[in-house]
Image (cartoon, rainbow, N blue to C red; front, side, top):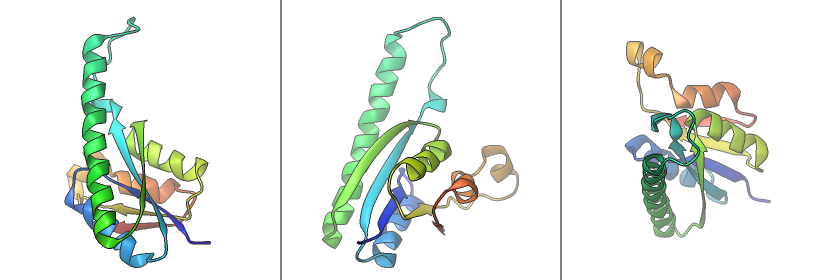
Length: 142
């Protein structure tokens, strides 16, 4: 049975490099490309159940995610590889980790933005959190 590889994907060069690397590292793999819509950027409005502005923002972010998934599928098509796509809402590191726990994946290949020093401390690192908490092996591509 071929390995099932999870590749988190965002609008960055490291994510594109990670997808290409995953194709090279696992030539016989089954690939799942995951885009996480970061809900931490959405405004929180307490005591409302249906805020049109938040809903519009969420819909716009989901449309952007669909564009990213189309890009990942096109990359797979260029390589002659089928790519399964998924979208999740939430905090990227947490959603990636939870996907790896709940769905049958054998490996995660993730891009690193290469932050260091104060930027890494202040902004954190999705890749670092995934490496520390993933239930499956993780390859970080720089």
